[in-house]
Length: 414
Picture 1 (tube, helix red, strand yellow):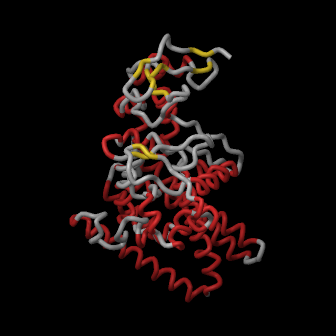
Picture 2 (cartoon, one colour):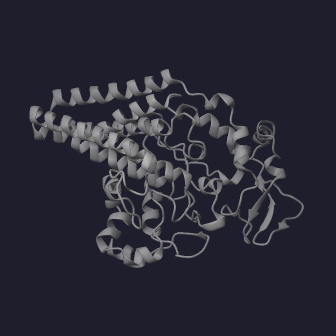
Picture 3 (cartoon, one colour):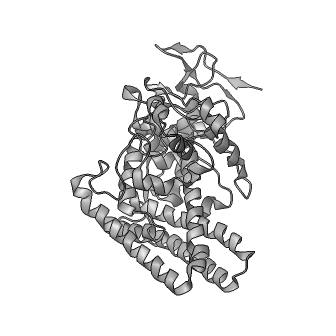
């Protein structure tokens, strides 16, 4: 196999640095390199230096030889454009499918129909969440007022406090990859891990229980953090955001009223089937997808880095996120699996993420971890999910670049 290399590596204070050594048939093809050079205005992949470990493999925890501006320059201008009509069309389709599923299942009302309905409707609730997620990032339209109106309605319909979650999610994006400052699915430092109650360890760090964590996270946040997404005095929020949090709380109360009235009208059994089981299925979708955004590399030998102090940067944190292929659900869920570029540039609408990602791949080089191609159902993601929960339990209390470690006691108890 033909491999292209530079003449000699350059030594830095920490690791060896060299140009990319690549098979001639790899994803670093000449056409892609030329695209990077022309579109981004930076040196092609083969002319840039990527840090390497002593064994010659890429050190993806090291600062990359490109910046956020290089990625931004590579993204076509049309990818930044928001189409309000298109966004509403996606939302209308989601709402139409949700309604059709509910009406159909209620009309059939047979034992064999309900499990099929539960899975399908849970998937659609997750699609609705992603619409509200895009409203929170202001990528739904150019109007903040419209985004917040749609976001409050859509998220309240699936019992998510839009502004409370939106603000904490903003904190997550602003600090992704930072051990202490990240907000969701961040590592548990060893000192906190050792003092966690046994039930808390199981609920946060083991399958399947962690896949039902989202409502509890909304109520009390993650281990090591205090407050609630419903409490406007929580340190997540500024005084100026108080009324926003209260507005979303009011929308939640309104939705609880709607559910109560529907239960009185249709009966508890019907609402159990129509709404409550799909709700918990949606929670599982949310926890699985968001966990796999940041854990479980497709390469079983790779541990993703987490940062502290001066080693952390917005770019380096974002480059540790992972793209996934969800098969038939990829487009149904509005490309939420296309995550790397979304994390770095959340203003890009979901329908433009694929094009933006393709434009940025040549710039990122080995820092982009190509997702495994899925079949119709994304069963290939079970392996990295299970592996991560078996191996990724805590990180050390000190160190500016750290990796997950395994706690044998937790593995044995689980």
